[in-house]
Length: 396
Image 1 (cartoon, rainbow, N blue to C red):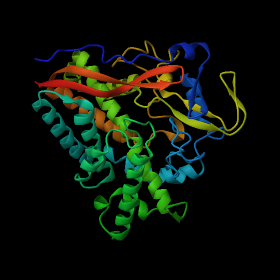
Image 2: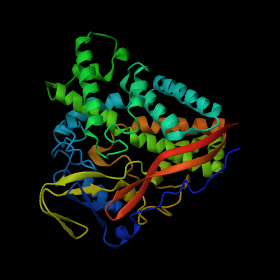
Image 3: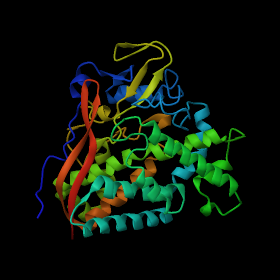
């Protein structure tokens, strides 16, 4: 018999006061201050203005916390601005849209079915380590088109490739990823033989690709692969975990999806808005400017605070409530403008198939224990997910 605890589905808006009063928040990141843009309109405007708010700064500086100390490789196309950005994006978009293919979805469904079956057979399990992490890692083999055996290596890395229990920026852990990618690129180079498109993995595609008439360098391929491994790891794990936490306290919503599967996509978008698995992303200012009447100096950093923008009361009716009937939902959980998340199609497809399968197969979700993951962001404390979420699932 488990003892059910409550409150795990509550994700409070940490930014409401500052957003409604000044529109700007402040935080320090490794002695590199950041002005946080909090309103949806202002976030979208800044995201679109790559001339003033650039991504192509020193590698690692736009990430929060900054990865300058642990990374020299530029993540592509994430840290490249227009016009160079266009060529990389045009190369990568078709590959990262593959989750829309029926054959891809069938393979993903097999992974989801096995993951849920294992959860239902256990007395209890940690959704973070024993459900979300394996699901994310196994799904990544589909995105890369590599053997499923690789997933165990990635699972062993834990929920974040740059962070450990003792450090938000663990250089030793980061080097494990860099060395792994170097070795995989070298192996793909040796084995680079003509083959059917369906048999190509992402490494092979990149080795044979050109952008603006030039072959990609090994460093550029490495930049794409670092982004692929790091960009959609803890965010997808957060999204999966937070979704299970929500339905543990709102089973009627899950039952409604089972009865009305046509609302599933809308429900997923609303959950993504509410949880905002990635709090923010930075930019580096190229010239003296102003945001919300606050002066911003050249070469300083701003953040596009997606989590705050997604709760903007000027845009979203009852923003702190999950509403599967929300008519207008212009959330920015996957970013905005030309740097909209490359892996958004993959993440959405995982969540859509997962939620629908939960609705059809799971009768109840009881939370046994929870350890919340709280981000400290200067004057703000924000719950982004869970370090550990132990649950017991029962089948229909």
